[in-house]
Amino acid sequence: MTRHDILLIDDNPNDVELALTALENCNAAERVTVAPGGPQAVALLRGMARLPSLVLLDLKMPHMDGLDVLDAIRADRRTHNLPVVVLTTSGEESDVQASYAHGANAYVVKPMDFSEFCETLRVIAAFWAGLNRRPSLN
Image (cartoon, rainbow, N blue to C red; front, top):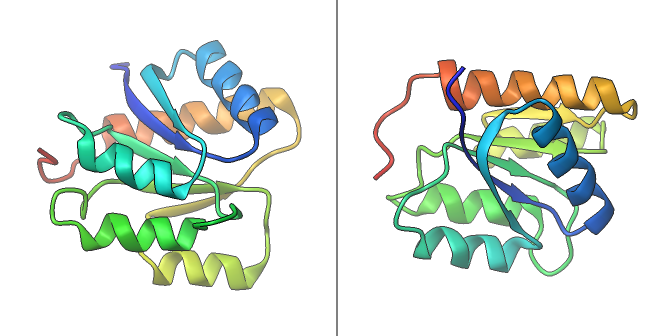
């Protein structure tokens, strides 16, 4: 499997560490860049010479939540087609509906079991950053 660059957007350091460990254990990404919040993520994407293959986006963040980040990604011509998977602890139907309404490509509730979380991230990365065919991003 080809490995790709992933942008992980999450404000919780524990969740970031868990995701990084899982991505490393399942060998799913060539490089993972972390943005600790929405404003940082938007600024980072605007400044990247080479966009990531996939964005993993937490929904519940202060200052700029995941829905606002989705709006910013979809409003920018350069990042409009960037695959974004909402990866969150919320299983609320209203969050699922809102995420898709704002342009999410997928919505995944973080599994509590580490091995299941690792497998979930492996499958997400394999599909969205590997198998999925999309228009050129750059």
